Length: 244
Image (spheres, rainbow, N blue to C red):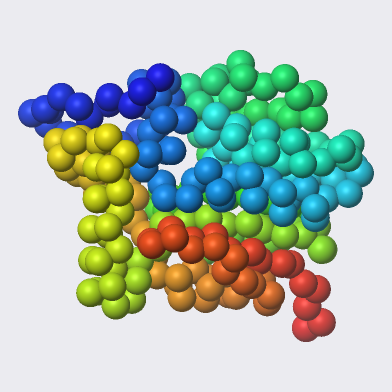
């Protein structure tokens, strides 16, 4: 279904949320809004699948409609357990309805909850594709620390995010290019403007260096940025065993 959530003028723009209306058009919305989404999802699926062995658990945190979960399953013949977690009930219901793979289960839970960390215990891989940017900035460090502890000793975290360039001029250039890309994908100026307003209070992005420092502080001593397109990036963070 084509995304037309913001195609009519609204007298009051409410904060963006993953509602039933958004869920119904989400595949089209994210494809036309996030540069490289159709590259990031299959490759994170491939990386996650290559890191997992038979019997391993993989967590797709902030799974939305389960695209990454499905990408992981498509790349592994192993008997793995893939658990997609999202705090949006409509998203979880949509993911369940679209899932035909018995290795995948979808659960409604908040990323910051103790329940989520309990579910993630012992996971070989945790994927967070464009999720942390919607979490309270004050809770991001503690969330990553919790995920580090939950991961298996040789675990891998895959973190994809919109990022802010530390150079204001470069950030503006890429931000304006991103908006032009959205218009080239068929969004009107009204849609671009209203969507941008709706995200102002709920999507707060960090510079790449902040992400790397936060990952290091959480315990991830081996990190790498494997992807970047304009202001969108993805990182790999491996768990290592500390001797002190």
